[in-house]
Length: 171
Length: 465
Image (cartoon, rainbow over all chains, first blue to last red; front, side):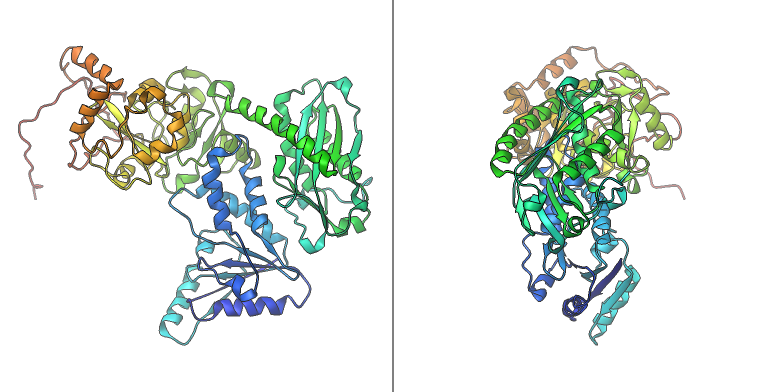
């Protein structure tokens, strides 16, 4: 299992790099999971895949529907199923969109569940490629824990390079 | 163990997922219908290991197709009773996932199953093999099951028909579960997820008291503690009941003492004033004592204005949080309002005197009908004087406490006591910053009971240099 995260300042072309990398790598054998971890989600468009719902939506659902769930509901099993519901399957790779960041509620428990679920999801793929915003929110929240390689994309601008440096420090 | 089946069976296949391209068939799921059900039956009603199938079997399904799917198990044994049905049913998910090439997601009428092409290639021919493997696992892992039989359904009409009956069974179960109270269980669950923020905070989650972040109820605690007993959710054996109304248990006190690092050693689970449950800061709602009316107001996180005492949620959250027992404030989850034991030692709903209208709307169904129009919101009451007048006018039950207080003899001299107890501390007029409380830990706690303090003059002196 190999996980590559691609980060960098917005507008420097990281989603383009992610998209092209995914297309190139799926020409081989092995299973690939693409994750769009940028709240300002662009990867589905770049890949030409239609995605209806995101993990953020499912996390919200867990919070909103809390009181109307049958009393003994196993929330981990439910959330896991919801994650697979939003996973988009294409012939060559699968795509998950993390979606919106947290709202004002308390997400500790939901995130705790999500961590375990994401661990298990990623194990099913030979390679995972994550397109993430410069803040590395999901990685810093440790929702996706093990990243083997980090690709930092930047243009020649000073700010781009500063952001790149910060990404490396954040990790 | 797996020789008789053409597939491997092992917990290591648990997270295994079958991709759309790799699947032979998809069963039930978000794009189809299905359910799983376990029912208790008499020992003489069941033939151990029997299997029957209604509808097409696996190999007569077209590759890549999707079908409705139902699994019904009947179990019997000396120790088997209807209350065990749900517990056994949940294991269907675990056990079936041990089967290589078979993916099971979710539960009840939301199940979602996929069988891989690989599994079929390796010799999986019929649902009977799946059923037999699952039944074997049930008997191995749950020894109280003496006999078990399975009926699977893949015929769409039959699935629909039986699904309707299954829904009724789930409903009846939920009704019984909702009737579960603190007295009915031996174990509560603790949660320390927030301890990174508030190191001495431990939430005690009981059937009548949800965690204050609102995310974890007693069942969640039980499920999580089972999966990872050394993790953030863990069992707390109740022990002896020390105070029925306040909700104090010896087992809980022991755990509190050890997990809070000695910070506190007694918790009354349903009390606002005496040894209250601590808060981390994630609570959904905070209750605050209003001495002027001897009542308790409540503010939820989404309310951005000020309460009648002039404080905002965030200010009060700052007072209440941090894992200490602070008398006068209490952080709770919204669901706690629905508890039959809601602050019962302090008068329950009769003590509630103010609530923002959004919060009130959310829990409207759970507010006692006769109090609905007696509890004002921010539009009706914005300050303490208006509050008192309003409660008087509406004859809120709290007015009876005022009558009692006036009848009682005036100002007994203050007592200095060496142990903490319940009476509320001095009131802070709105506008002044909150006076820091004497905390737990070092030294003596001074408790003033029935004291009326009058101060003629306050002299502020700069620190002597």
